[in-house]
Each structure stands twice: as structure tokens, then as C-alpha cells.
Image 1: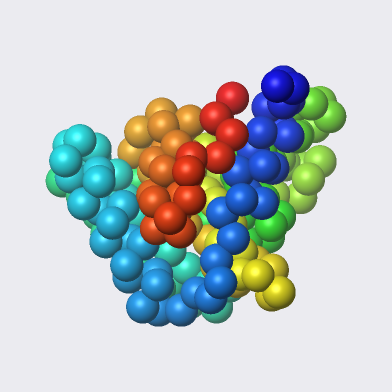
Image 2: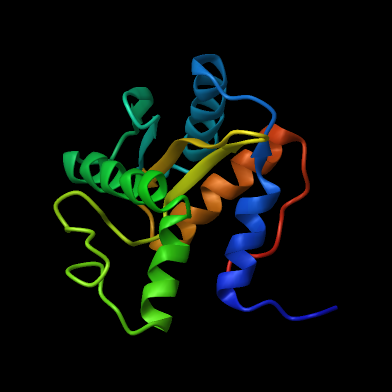
Length: 162
């Protein structure tokens, strides 16, 4: 078994979690599953699922703050703009010794390069939406999304998050 670099492992996750279609009903199902998962763990998160033009699902769980909603919005913006998970964007920028701003032109008031933003890809279409959460440590935010998307798609967990 070959050892994947952290960036390759994240890319493998993104490639594996491909939807056949995605609409408001799917956003609600995924968001609701993520909410139920987080509630059982008493995770104080905000969940934000959005397309490039409008919100599709939002939930703020007990213990979350308005700041969590803002962080989730900014992480979703990264996934929508870069067509990559916000964690992968962070690792790529670090590997290149670059900063989100000004190097990558991702101003911090609208973009957060921390784990917890994930692109929603549809087969034959590409990225159509993003899902983001905030409230846990960066990799835990990312892992929550990956586990729920894999479960929703009936897939085994893809490569482990580095």
C-alpha cells in the first residue's frame, strides 16, 4: 500500500465523494444528517451548505456562536472559489510558502483557509455547491463533513485525513 501525501489524501477524498445529482432536497438531507451526527456528540457547530448564488441549508447547534456561522461562510467561499476543500487549499499554500492574502488573493474577510469547507461535486458537472462547518478544531470539522458525505453516498470512508 502506497503512502499518500497529505495533499494527495485530501484530493482522493474530494474525488471519491462525487454526487450523481445535488439539489435543495439533497442539501437538506445531508445537512440534517450532519446536524443529527453533531447533536449526538454535543458538537457546538454551525453548518452552511450553499451554491455559488444562494444558501441551501443552515443550522446553528447549541453552543455555537455567530462567529461559527461567519467562519463556515468563509470556508464555503474557499471551496466554491478554489474547487477544493479549504483544508487542501491551506496545505497547498503552506507547501508553496504562500499566504491566503495577498498571495492567493483570498481576503480574510471572505475566505478562511482552515479545515471545514468541502466542495460538492456532481458527476459530469463539477462543483455545484459547498458544505462547511465551524466550531471544532480544523481537521475535526473536515472529518465530520467527509464522514457524513461518505455515509450519504453509501461509500466507505475515503483516504484518512492527514
